[in-house]
Amino acid sequence: MTDIASTVAEAITSRHSVRSFLDQPVSRETIERLLDLARYAPSGTNTQPWHVCVLGGDVKRDLSAAILADYADNDERDEREYEYYPTDWYEPYLARRRACGWGLYGSLGIERGDKDRMQAQRARNYTFFDAPVGLLFSIERRLNTGSWMDLGMFIQNVMLAARGEGLHTCPQAAFANYHSIIRRHVPIPDDEIVVCGMAVGYRDPEAPENIWRTDREPVAGFTQWFGFS
Image (tube, rainbow, N blue to C red; front, side, top):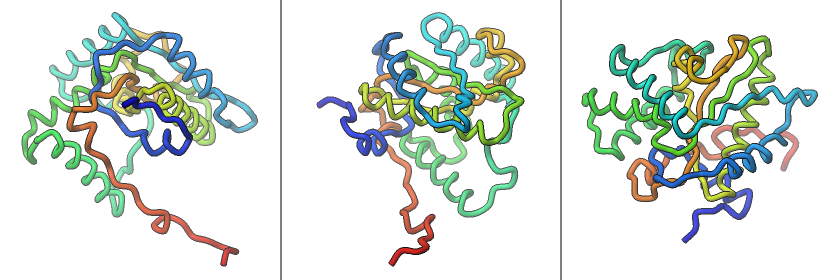
């Protein structure tokens, strides 16, 4: 049975953050097709404020090795140049965050308090979860919030286009924690912010972390209607 989304609805609903990939290569031509589709994302006054570095082979392996070596010596860095999460967690976001974290760890049989296995699982971020291709997204630091929204729509397009190729992805803000190491391996200029990475490849359908899914709030939970009967 193929794992290719054939409709927009199927691409959206079958997309999820995959954290274990098969050892199956993805060609440069395939990634170019994804980016060729993603570039049709909307952006304010057509600014198109996205920049992408595509990593594979030795470059991806060397970057992962450098980050993992630092991770092992110093624990996880936090040098992100922007605030992603709430400074102070509160409901309903705190409960959702906890459910996501414990759902993932539970799928892997990692019990509460098992800090070593939790740390090892977090470290897998920096191998792009063994995906054959890693993407790094950056944006010029002079740009404002609207351009970050545009970048988000571009990133979503990449993930949905991947489903049309039978590929899966995992967007990874964790890479922003290591922008200084990334810049030693990839020529991202200092006037750009490393926003996130993304693993791209073929999903391992047997991996328990890929079988587990997060919950989603129903439409009634986040929508108000005006002018409709």
